[in-house]
Image (cartoon, rainbow, N blue to C red; front, side, top):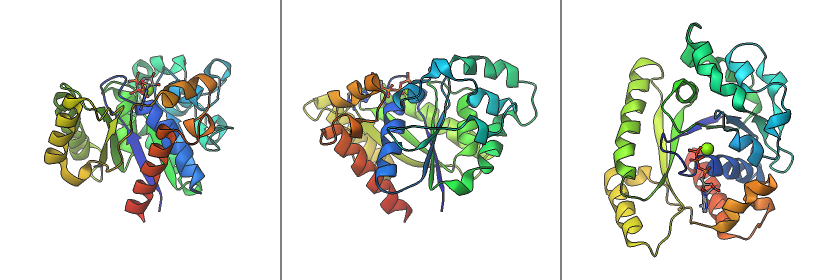
Length: 254
Ligand code: ATP
Ligand code: MG
């Protein structure tokens, strides 16, 4: 059965894109067929997958606007061996241009239905905002993965996100659930991080993934080479953590 996950958090810089790229590559490593959708005009997931966003003729923008079928826009991440619907700055205009379109929140969902059978997992890297692009991700998804840093304000932002998910469930997508909260850039020596992590577990229980992503320089370096961390340093703590996350998700899905 296919699993469609929106990787989202309106807070910036929490590890959404790092998680999208490395989870996609780790699932492929485990034998799964994966499609990654870049929903962020920053195009970081595109660049980090080894695809130059500046050279693209067509992107997810054209899919959302209905100008191209998804199959025409899709490219392969050569290092990651997953398929990618890329994005670049063009996407920044999409929100305004989509305003008058019918079912503007469900455009990605409709497009993904045409290729869904080809994949075991579809991951969507959302932008750091609760905007129409993120809403398209939430409407297309079965579940949400929320990467977060264990910092003081993290919990506050989380309640906004949880409320948004509830609203999307009522208005657009009744099956949407929270798949899990992922602790990222974790430093076990940081006392506050441990406290916030404990609070998260108290509030959200088994919605918190057991796998914790440590702060690891290899994860930060890999996008500079346009590769998932597995192909930069296979034995790094970061690479092993994302392989463990892939396994945790596959075990839960099986
Ligand atoms: P945005 O909200 O801008 O889209 P994001 O949530 O996608 O950001 P990333 O781009 O994945 O976050 O990560 C932010 C920065 O932190 C990047 O420079 C990334 O390389 C670095 N980073 C992410 N995860 C880790 C980690 N576990 N260890 C070290 N650095 C990390
Ligand atoms: Mg990002």
